[in-house]
Structure formats: structure tokens, C-alpha cells
Image (cartoon, rainbow, N blue to C red; front, side, top):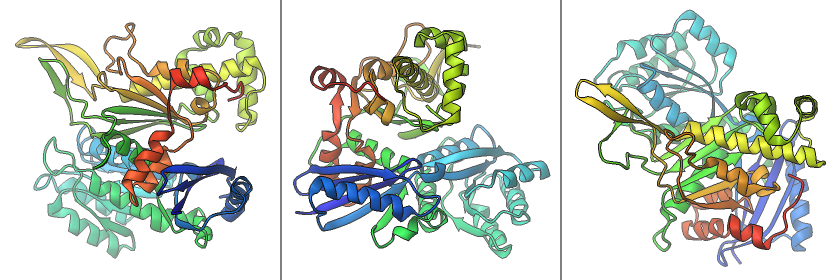
Length: 474
């Protein structure tokens, strides 16, 4: 048997998936408390012990691969030339690599900008600006500002190639860890973000893993390949595109609800689907990720309520506003609490539904009628996801929640919001065994096995509700 151990060092739990690569099946799953803030091996050992109890004995693992979202992932700041162009390209590269974007800056950095960046204490800065052969002065100025700063983080330079090497040399001379990669926008309207994504992941592996103590588990792990959000993205890409032996699922959307954020991944071109519609702004990346840091089920529960409107939210949850506030106070006092009453279950369902509704609405594109000198024109901003054929829900509130179908349907198009380009009639599935991240890790080793294993975790909601008893505790 060729067995693989796939590990996710999370902020709350260290999750394990043992798989038989040859047989394309999951052998067992287990988890233990995340102990990254003390000693990562403690939580890993507890999870391995739980796995051993299920299997009788641990197999000899041919591969032991890990991802990590512990401590909130990579803290990243992007700097670009123009907010709508190179700064946006840098943002897409950062999010696609699994980073937690904590700040975005454009134009010439001022002293107050630099102070703000230092206060943010990023793990990585992505410095972009100028198309190849274009503006060099602004990125040269910004490089000089960073050289004179107190920042000790890695600085990835992905700017105008005419000045990139000069900027890297200046940063290196100032004692900064400067990394050169290709321009994220080499020509006007052209995105080339994969090299920057790869550079971000390399920094994660070499530096952030050490900072979070995950390298203490070196004897038990072959490699930490990427941040967990990037692993989920790679799993989504694999399911969408398929392999040489397996046809993919086509255009898809993944919604991942967590305690701190709600992440949305889309794998689709997203070009206008109707004749006469004009695309506005930069082309969207084929594989796109957005992170909604104000839509976490625990750390930001009150922010979700405020976004929906307290009275509207309370009505949906079947609570009075007084009851709602008391329950939110309880969550803020203990962000790890799970619902134990019908009222708390209803609150969690309403939180999850609202988080999905808002997060997918922000991720999807919009259309609007704009008046021009030639007459009215329909303008599309962002991705048209109306033709997406599969929507996948992952994360605890969907995999273990009481009403996953109603929650995931919040991702769909709504006649009351006709300008939002959300999916119209997709198949709804749950990543029941939490294998998207595992598929993303295994894809580099055996894409066919990764595809088949990740595919087995997808449960159409109608099938799941018909055959599987639902837990009443999320």
C-alpha cells in the first residue's frame, strides 16, 4: 500500500487525512488541538494517536505533506502604482497565494504610509508598479522608502522590469530580504500573477513555517508545501480542470466558512456571457480567491449581524434583538463555543447564511447599464459566475451544520438583486470529508489520485439530506 499523510496545521485544530494513494481512498481521518503557539508537535502527536486508534496501527507513509493556516496565515501588504491597475494585480497575487491581506497602498509612499505599514507588521510585502517599460520613478521612490524603513519582512519585487533589479539591489544593500520575480502586470490590462504567487509560497515555506514553529515537526513531516487556502485553491483547480485521465467538473465556486474569515474561490473565465456586454477593468484571474475578514463565524459574528442589519438578522434567526445580543456576547467571550441549544443552532444557521450571501456577492461580478455618447451600454465589473455548474461548500458550518442546503443556496442568484452575477442553476455539493486541501497537497505527487480522492468527498446536498442523518450541533 502506498499511503500518504496529509496534514493541515490550523489555528484551532491540526487535521489529518490518511489516504491510500493506489486504492484512491481515505483510510482514516483525525484531528487534535492546534498547539502552534506552544509546541506544534503536541497537537500533531495527539492527532496521530487518534489516527492510530482508528487504524489499529499507522502505516508507513510514503508521503507526509502539510499545509498551514495557523495563526491566521501570512500577513501581507501590497504596494502598487495605481489602485485600479498594478495595485489590484498585486492584490490578486497575494490572495491567490493564500495570504491574509492586511493593507494595500498605491502611488508614492508617504512617511505616514510607511508608518502605517510598519504598524501592520507584515510577514511579506509585495512591491509592484509600472508596466514593463512604463513608469519607473514611483516604484524607485517606493523601494527607497522601504529601504529606509525598520521593516524586516521579506519584500517581493514584481514591478516594471526596467527598474526591478535596481530596486532589489537597493533593498538588499539596506539589509532587506528582497526577492525578484516577474512583473504582475507586464503590459496594460495583462495579468501575470502566477510567478508572484510562487514567490509568496516560497517565502511561506522558508520563513513563516519557522516563525510559527511548524519546523519543530520536521521529523514527522516531509514538507509544508503551501498555506491551507492555497491548498484549497489547488484542490478546486484540480476538480475543475480534471487530469489527463479524468474530465473535470468545469466552472465551479467554492465557499469556505471559517471562524475568522469566509473565503470564496472561483475557477472560471468569468467573461461576459451575453452579447453586447462590455467588460470593465482588469481581466479577472481564472482561479480567483477573495477573503472576507469581517465575515468569520466566531471572531466576527457581530460584524456579520451588523452587515445584515440587526433587526433583519434577528428575524431570520427567530430571535429577539435582546436574545441576539446576549448570544453574541457569549460568542465574543468564548470564540470556540459550539451551539448546544435550538436557539444557538438557529443563530449559527443565520450567521452562515449571511456570511455566504455577502461573501459570494462581493466575489461575483456585477452588471449595470451605463450611459455613453453612443447610448446605453451594459457594463460588467468582475467575473460573470452565472454559468458556474458546481458550487462546493467546505468548512465546519457547512460540513457539520444542521441546514447546509439552505446555507449554500445563499450563494445563488437572487431576483431581488438582478445586477449580481452569481450562479444561476448549479449543482450544490458539500466537501463532506474536508478533502479539498488534501487534494491540493496530493496534486503535486499524483494528480489522478488527488482528483479521485477529492471527488469522493463531494456529496450532492439532495443525496446527503436523503441518506445521512444530520447532526444538530454545528
